[in-house]
Image 1 (cartoon, rainbow, N blue to C red):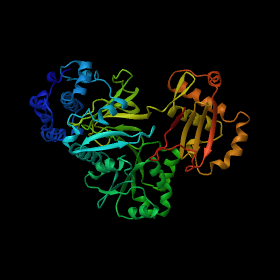
Image 2: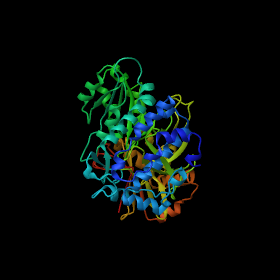
Image 3: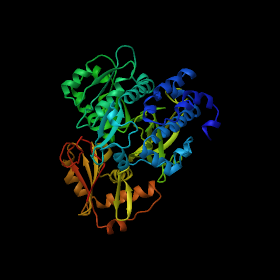
Image 4: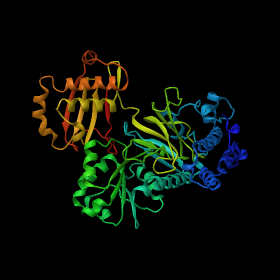
Length: 514
């Protein structure tokens, strides 16, 4: 249904009126009201936060904004050519029409925003921009992003306010000071510390600490501050907190209420250690990307579902044709920043696979919140090819772990600090590397239990299980044996050199070597 025919059009049209809907020049774009000012006006008119408005009202506002974003992008010749080749030169005024626009993959994104930055609507020489890069968990290759500084600050403000209402207020109890810190630090233009810190600094009623990588002494000092605390870091940093608890008093341990992790997998063993060390701790996912800050937040520690920040992005879960999948189906995560006037990015494929979940309803906690939701399924590159068959690495890991556990050989979930599939195509070697303290001492016992065939039968059984249980597809022992691959398990120390890490210390689930 067209916005112009829908109920509430007068309100939406008054918030983004026709005279700002179709800017014709760069100067027109620079003169546009910010989208944050539009959202503030909507909240003032309706007397409630956007996140508590009916989904229909949110959708009408976002569709109107998308129509404006498409027209802003058309000011740039490259964007205009991409858009018009797909949908013609008419208005893009429905979600259905928006889905017909081409997906912006990483190669296209680099062409538009690296080097001459020909995809920017407002040229870089007009100044007022921040250029940042992300390392990428899988490849480690930097990918530059250009943000207008004023829009970036508005992003921080909007996301910080949402985190305050939906996460910090329910989970940081009592009067007195409250604290949030991050261990993230910037490195070679990888600006995780700046960007996540920018959001955390804008959480109302909470003090901010930019801790960076911490020694035990610094952690002890920070945890001595009176009041409940939240801390955010990559998974490896959050995992260290279990050991760091040794230097804390019980009161200091009790004061840690929230651990937010990003960029990786927290194994069940790490979760159990953290919960044992910090009795009040809630472990939650903060899902973000440099190209789209604060994509989704886990609000319920007992559910893996991530909640989007209403009004910040359009979040899509799409199939191979760029069309929205149904609720419960898995697809590629595609993000459009709604705050971007000077350097918009339409339909950016972030590089993650997620499952579309039902929208959050107002009867869920925190009460009144309505928002789109999804569940993380893994990196887009977390697939492994053996012969002609493709395997999902997260699903294969779950099935292989279950095989080892059911045969009373090894409880990977209970002991592993890190896990990684390492595939070497030239030598046809397929290894599951499990990192855990002291695990190497169990090698003789495990080797005896496995017998002459080693771990191969268990690994193959797990791979077969992963296909039959999750995909309705088939894999057989014969096809895996005939592939010529050697399947094995390697036990290593958590900090040993056997695990492959990116330049910023991330441990990708899959390492695929030629």
